[in-house]
Length: 206
Image (cartoon, one colour):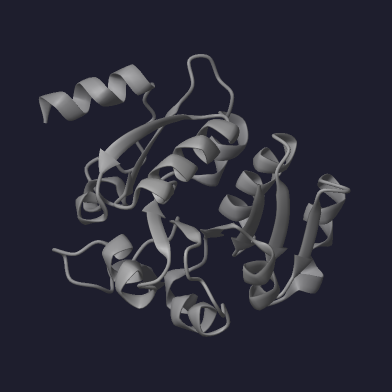
C-alpha cells in the first residue's frame, strides 16, 4: 500500500517505519522535507520524502500527524483527496504559555471537524492519544497493545484496521467519527495501554 505521512515527527516517523517494515511504500512529508534524510536512510528503498502535495499525489492512504495549529496550512497544500483514506492522529489542542488548551467546542471531536473540512476524503481516527514511545517501543508485543479507532465509512474502517495490525498493534473498532472524543487526547481512553480483550471489556462496562 502507498502511504503518505503528513507530519513526519515522532508519531508519523515511527508509524512510517513500522509500516515500511511491513512492506508498505512510505512517502514522508513536512514543511521542511530536506530535514527528513534520517527517516529515509532508516527505510532505504521503500520510502521517499517531499512536500505535502507530493505525498498526497503519491498515496492511497494518508496519515495526518501534525500539530493542530498547522492543520489549515497543511490542508491548503494537500490537493485532491477524493476517495482517499485519511487517518487522523491530530488533537484539537494548542500549547501556549505553559498550558494545553482545547481549540474546538467540547462536544465535537477533532475527527468530525476534519471530516467537515475534507468532505470527499474517508476519515478515520486513530493513534491520537498514544505517545510516540508506545508506538516505537511496544509494537508487536504479545499480546498486542490495542489501538482504539473510529471510522464511519467501511473502506476507512477496513483500511485503518489493517494498518493498525501492520504497525504491530491490535485494532479495536470504537464506533463512528462522532464517537471519537473518548479516544482523543484528554478523553476517557487517552493514553490507555490495554490489550484488545481488556479494551473490549472496558468498552462493554462503560
